[in-house]
Length: 390
Image 1 (cartoon, one colour):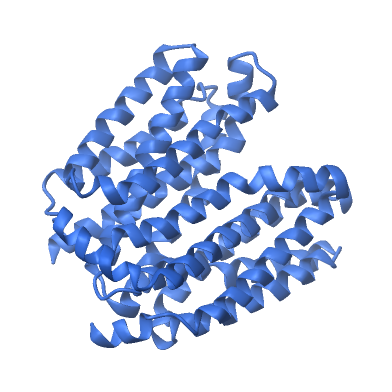
Image 2 (cartoon, rainbow, N blue to C red):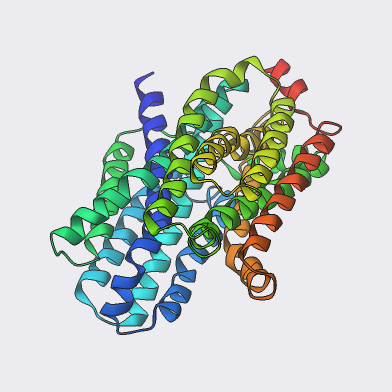
């Protein structure tokens, strides 16, 4: 039982690291651009290395886990992160910075996929959904805590790389917990058995993966452009615009906690339909509203009702087979990460041609598409049979 708790804590921290890396980027971008004497637009493109590292590692880890044990991966991740930290501290080279950022993305992606895999192996049925939600809430928690930490670092006139040192401290905790923990053993023989099962549920995995991609793309396209939309279109000040984003992530985290306890009373596919339907309607209300008070209430509702969607998709992917398949789960996680990478690639041309409001409308259209895909999933999903069998 003690080992199970340790592995669960490792899973929690694995999500907090990735959340911290993604959330901090926007806040320290200006400082890093000034440090390297580059335009902020050029520096922002360099952070593609971070997202690329996350994407590559999540995609590959389902295969890596067949050859390198989880414990060895976490120890190797500790050494790589230490190397990246030393690179950030002791060099002013843009090449070394890009390499270090890529390593951070690589290690955090591997660690997050390990965290997801551990939860799917440790918990069964609807309990799995509960703990995946709790795990995912640590991503949002980083989104709330680290902006405050960054503010304190800047108040103390410390250099920007201190934020990465603090993120590394989280990985040190993971490393110390992992050294004495016992992890599930996953062999290539096991993988081949699971792969055969997965082929029979290809349609389910495909629908779940497309749904995850469109959901993350819609969510991040919406939340990323809210500040600019609020300031430029609605004429709010920057403090009011920031509040809208903060309200979203706060209610998102609270929603994860609440849904982690009530999901066991509902069929996962059916509640997915309800949540995507409500979220689509609430997002539409946001787009047609201009009052700050109403917008605050609407975005709180949106954060709450959309908080469990992505985790339900991951949980459903793990329940398509009797034994959770890391490749199947990784495929859905990879699709969601692709949605992250596509956010600005898709929305920037829309904004240039049609304006900020069009990006929000496009996000709403993506949410509506996710709603219909959730309905279609009901005709193919195997999760009810596999929950019964557990």
